[in-house]
Length: 130
Image (cartoon, rainbow, N blue to C red; front, side, top):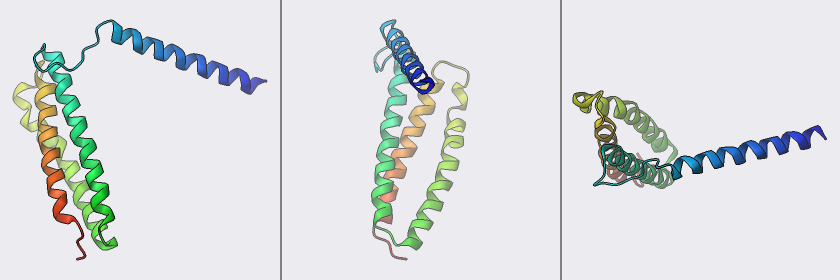
């Protein structure tokens, strides 16, 4: 009986959260509009970065499947090093706009560019044996 009550409470909490999210969207939460205000342009840049990141993750998985176990370790190490440096490099690149409303767009655009470049670089790993 107690378990059923807990489950019902969880379902109710989830429903409230969904309704609150819907209300926020209906209240004019910003979406992507490349010709809109800064907040809308920031959202476009964030969306573009998320798309680039998803593409990178797919390519990384595809390339890993083609590698010997030794080369998978090498690629994993290289990828971790690249990831460790990407965000700090983009923070430096966006330093001039720090504190301004354009900063998220500049930072996200840098992340997207870096991520797309890295995605292209992964192709050189395909099928490597040594």
